[in-house]
Length: 237
Image 1 (cartoon, rainbow, N blue to C red):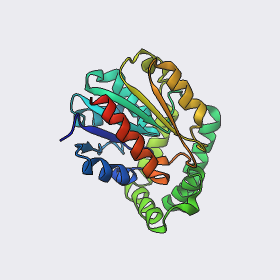
Image 2: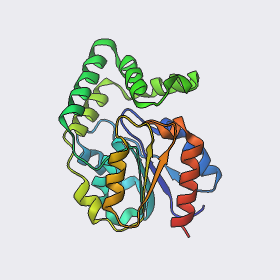
Image 3: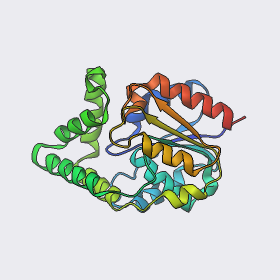
Image 4: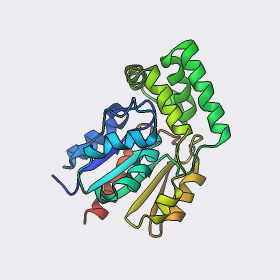
């Protein structure tokens, strides 16, 4: 296997299927890839991190997307020795704000009223730059993923995100390699959040993916894969 293992932490309502393009690409390139599991039903970010921590070999390249970024920052606080590097994809180090809480409460109400698939579809439409550009079979697979994770886990994850701590002090204290990736059209965690994380860590790298929203790993998989390949070649050198 090439270099340290690569750990891909998924986001809200997500499992290994959300990282499918990266898993296949990285494994074909000779990397050992781990997508943590079993944390979906935890009701705090601290609890999720505690479940994921034993699944991360020391050291690993940790790549975290969206809610996964909040978990990664907790892991960075709890088990810093497990990090060879950190990549934050479409996420933020900030705590929750009132506007996002209102949006999350609406999403939970929609899921309660119309079902998890309808809620997931609405969230996907918000998160993607152009949901119609996604292959129908991919959308169906992602909807099934959300259904498999379920309504109760979705509500627990939303509550955990709302109550998450401010991750900026933890990130500002980090002196390892940091990659920050954001979609140019991300409306969930827009580029200013990425620029803030980049500014907190001297020597970090910022990559902005054109024509991508919050879901760059499957909206623009070739672009994200190229960024990760270059990054891993550099940090494993």
